[in-house]
Image 1 (cartoon, rainbow, N blue to C red):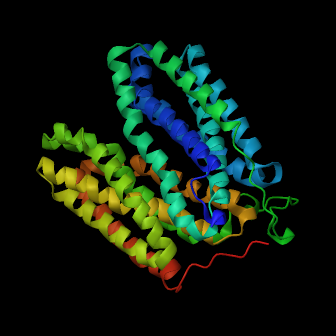
Image 2 (tube, rainbow, N blue to C red):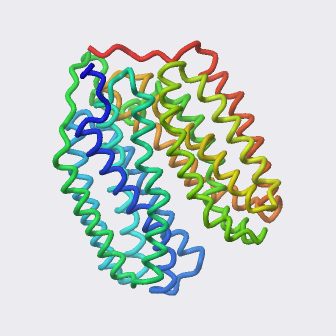
Image 3 (spheres, rainbow, N blue to C red):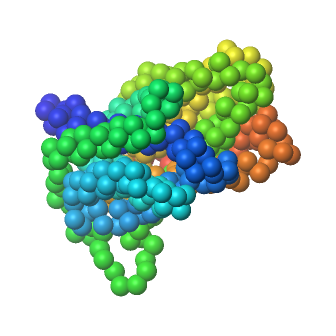
Length: 397
């Protein structure tokens, strides 16, 4: 039936916007620290701060976006965000010292939070309810592609171009992203007045966070926290094991595995429910972390990349789909913002807190510890979500 169509023009367009947004993010993530050291003679720790403060900006952007997105329209937020993305991309040319560069990174993160949250809200509304798991799986593949191509392009540009040219490329990409975003339609939903985000006097946390998705968001925070030690320390761990060549293919294997497996996990989520997918994802991720703590061979490291793709990669999209099934469409903006705020917190805070344990545990001990954390999260998921026979989707009127 036409009502169940997934691959519409708007779906493809918004997925393209998401891909370019993430592409710019990952491209600059591998460039900025080197730029701070080369241009301003920053120390490694300060360069890491300049790079990482972007995440703080993302959190600010998501928190504000979730509060207002349903009042003024997700398309308006998307366009405002892509315009801000152009401005902040161009501001890198004006970075004359480390303080200004750090402020630009913060502002760029806020713009990224606007665009990514608005795009995820729009796609949640245009996907047919019966295909939410499958649709979110396909949509999130645009970000997975960016995780593979962004760092690759960034490293290639560092090797063959100067930083000025890199900022020209990212600004051009931001302009293209804006041009694509303007053709996206604003999805309209007639919903119950009681479900709408209402302005209230004083501070109310429910105006900024969607409380119904807090349990699955808490699970996502812990899993993101565990995944952060892979994202941040895999290259250093590979150097310690003399597996640098295998490590260079790690994220490629991860991305390819996610691309192959996500369509199946999304369909299973829609057909069999959240528990049928979430338990295997969490257990496979735990196994991957355990193998990572024991690895001493390049093939094992690549196997870990594949298992992390199946486990963590599919957990991420399925957990997001579950969060959206818990709320009516008028709360998609807040639900999306809440979910990603928790994910970003886990990934952003993890390296700082867990990195301090490395002198005591070593990388092997840290990864083994995270396998235990994931096992504990399986139990927590059971008590918070798993005991419910099925995740019901509210009826939208």
